[in-house]
Length: 249
Image (cartoon, rainbow, N blue to C red; front, side):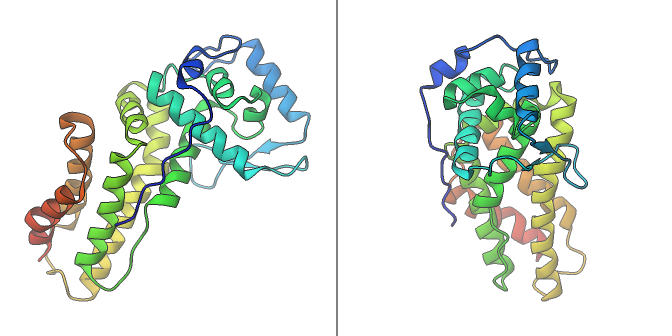
């Protein structure tokens, strides 16, 4: 089972919630301070370009100073910690900057909006913590993937994930970006794992694959958002052995 690496805190979360700087409009409309920070960032020849096929844009370094990967990580960590405390709608670039002890221009050089910051943070964490195993066994591959996913959601990232998922019905732009950048790629991974098992003859030809994919995600989110029961290995083993694998075989 993969181990989730929690983002390291860079400052006290209370100061992040208060912002530590000029007020910011959380509706998505920039304040004069935000526009000034973004203008300052652009003077350093940094440009944000859209990632192919995604509604949210990934940051792309320009011709200015080289990007500091450790700084990126600290800013992402700060965003997660603030969001875990105040939620997505109340998250501001001011609060992230204060929590990370950085200027807003530093953030805007990397992400054009809080939507881009949050989606990029989620995507980076998933890529680091949730593998696509291919060891030649449907049982082993599904168990490793779901164990990593459950550990990811049930670990220190869990509170921020709860805050984010809870906002999706109220934030259409966030919901679309979250589906395209996070949910659909993980469903695709799960589907590929099952398809490889089908090719190896481990799964019956008429297995309800779509249903299994839906059930796997629903079971994880049900525990994360509704019951609060632990997303531990015991739960993953029960889900696989009593529900998913019997449906596939």
